[in-house]
Image (cartoon, rainbow, N blue to C red):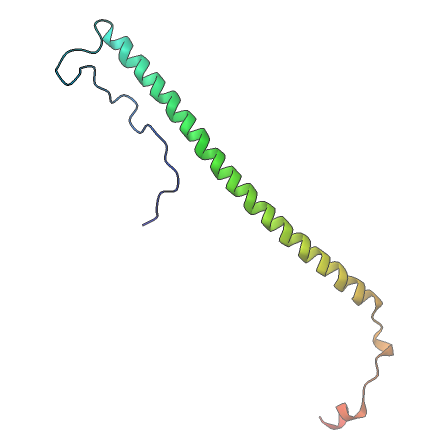
Length: 104
């Protein structure tokens, strides 16, 4: 089971009580408008939380891509060195000892 790395809060946008613990209404009038405002505020909070999670994902991705870029640059340097060595190599100048052929 994968573990959760990031949380997006609030999960439930419209779950809120319009009444306190004693049963008295928290809102005296316009209950529908209170529910709508509460839902809208929670939706904005959830979007802000989502933006923070996305920022974390992209920051982590950027760090990984910088690491990969450094490794690719190191490989590129090694390939250039090898390409230079292969360009200077002349197989006609290499001497082959006779012992090599007698050992076959």
